[in-house]
Length: 258
Image (cartoon, rainbow, N blue to C red; front, side, top):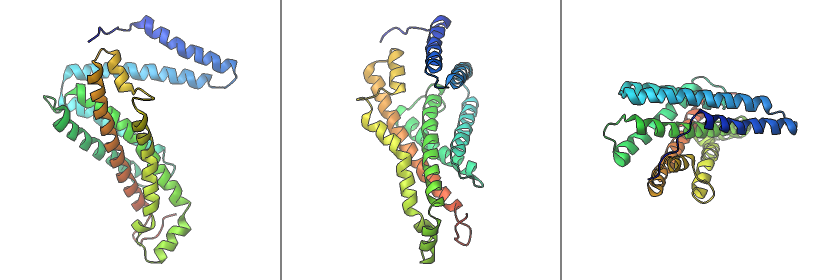
């Protein structure tokens, strides 16, 4: 165990200097990213600063309802972002994405909490909130990628789908291959990350634990659990989102909705 080097405002200001240099480089090369970099830096600092105070309050308050409230906010924001990244807008799409992420996150957290980590209380903020944040962020991306892929390919394949329907296929059979392709597409980033983790990249959670002085073997153990959680949650999310979207593309008469 190593002593944690605490960062004060001086060190944080020095870190902001990195973005100042980045803005200068953008201006020097006339890339045009100066405003975007400045806004992104400001939002990063503000959002994480607020998050630090909010989590500090919740950790100190140590109440199950407070934990559930912050998780509900995180879930809703993740669902909204995922829905907005899918160009095809359909009725109940936000509810569909929200429900898929809710189910996958809840099942993953319940399994991990009761069978792996086993904290004294199921709502232990130290464990539930960070793990939920990791799952929600990855499930959000998986839902957005698979949903956008499925919507795009179905919109481009109306004639082929209608041909299958006219030959007696059910709506589920007509789009089965498209759904499989969308699920694979949404899951590719997770597989790629799992293939190279520890060899090419050090994930943020592992790096953060090492910087905070956690034993390297213990940090690696937690990272293994986290990666397997992400894989399960992402696959389940893509399965649920694509199944729900497939139903949205057909009416009660099994006709394609244009």
